[in-house]
Amino acid sequence: MTRQGKFALACAGAGVVALMAVRGALRNRRAISFEGRVVVITGGSRGLGLVLARQLVAEGAKVCLLARDPEELDRARDQFPVDAEIMTLRCDIRRRADVRYAMNRLLDKWGAVDVLINNAGVIQVGPLEHMTEEDFERAMATHFWGPLHLMYECVPSMRRRGFGRIVNITSIGGRIAVPHLAPYSASKFALVGLSDAVRSELEQYGIRVTTVTPGLMRTGSPLNADFKGQHELEYTWFAISDSLPGITISAERAARKIIEACRYGEPELTITWPARLAMRLNHLAPRLTAHALTLANKALPGPAGNEGDRLKRGRQSETRWTESF
Image (cartoon, rainbow, N blue to C red; front, side, top):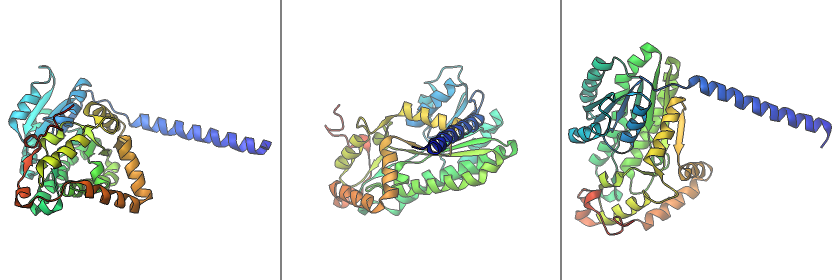
């Protein structure tokens, strides 16, 4: 290599290092502490939401948990130290009036919302033949309208103070449509679009929006998912996929990554290497991805007649395979 070539290479390397240093400095400037911050978590009575709450309380945050089941909220509250600043509110986020009432109670107590984490979700598993319009409406109400209701109630105070963090937890199913999860995927796609759209509009007010795309997480969600079709077979493939080592992530690790993304106001976070790989493959070779998903669908259980229209919870569909190690 000539002297000029070596000089150009050295300059390019120095430029890359400088750029990385500038990016790191800008990122650190965006970092926040959660000490004393008011954090609202939907779907906070169990699973990932509850794990997020524990970690944020450990950092000194004031946390408000929203969920539909009062008994689950009571059990969740009992898992925190007596001196933890925890508030639990029964709230069906699908109903704007419920959300408004809950936020008014929170504001009366703590005066502001600093961080909103839209985590609540429902999962409906089964062939399209057994999915009804009501299944799609329920998924959209939970994954799209619910987060929108919360943002309508929280954003005005964030704008007045010139600060806020919003974390919308979507799914790899909201980036790549998955067979036998049509209502779930369609509604998560809607949440991805909503999250990305409001990010660009709210940035000017000091409100940073993070779109989180998790892959498979070990949160125990299959037990509370709804199944149609051949219930036991549907539950078996879903539950086993959700617990395989190497391609899944624990709720604790996922929560740490989400909190760090929120801390720095990152625009996006994709969790697990299979999810990142799948998104890249879908972007580079959409036809190949579509063919692979078609083959995967052929391996899944087929429709089950009138009995398949009945909805059953995962805990009602256990088999010796799902109960095994």
